[in-house]
Length: 195
Image (cartoon, rainbow, N blue to C red):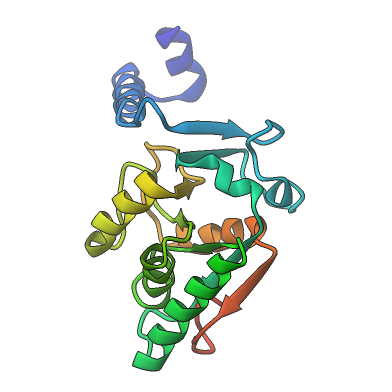
């Protein structure tokens, strides 16, 4: 069907073939145990499904049963004060004692502190990321992302072949909010994506 696709789309057969190969190779980077969940399926988070712009697919790595528990997002600035870091860690620790799962965006600063606070207290955490599962941002959080995927849950709305763009991160924030009962902003400037 390459000939017909080329004619209909106006792209050369070579370009279509290269794009196809890229997508297949990127999807092959997913783990056998990763989940690709379509809206409407049982594993798709029910709160998120009710939102206006719920993504059609979610890509998940880890313990999907965490989505059955109450979730609260803990977010904030990438450049927090020392007090902000302490507050994020402490809140993540306390929420876990009440069987509440802490979600955050795996960014620098408050997000990282919230994830680490939960893990240090042996509480579950969900990382909702702005990249595909097979990528890391920021790079210094790659090890933390791997740890969360093994012990807890990492969620992305971006297919493995999706390029990372600036708009991915506000979209990620919407998904994080959509799976949560509430969002706690620890510290944020007036122009912060957390707001």
